[in-house]
Figure 1: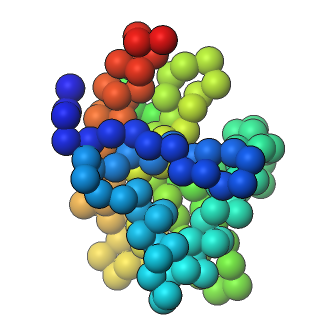
Figure 2 (figure 1 turned 90 degrees about the vertical axis):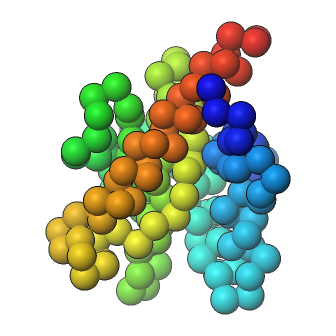
Length: 149
């Protein structure tokens, strides 16, 4: 298991999102919150994730806020995209759904899929590979957490 990553809860006012983070670093959502230029993005992500956590994954699939499983990903990994829409921009979160009874989401990173010139019609291959690698780490950490309980 990778010792340089951990899964940390990030409070969203009544619910917590689980975020994969490097040891010694802040969760990506907290970094977005502290930057004046990305604070609005952080607020949009927080609202979207909170709505998904409260309303459930079925609602997320029906509303288009949760998309996946992503194509081109190894079969044993449940990698999804959370879409956070605002007027003309859609923010995206690479998300791993663990194979426990709740299909617990672990949020990996924000990415600019479908808009970048190198990924017309899809997620950039580098982001997809990064998502796969981080999902494997998240799966290992969630399994270890489940075995400890």
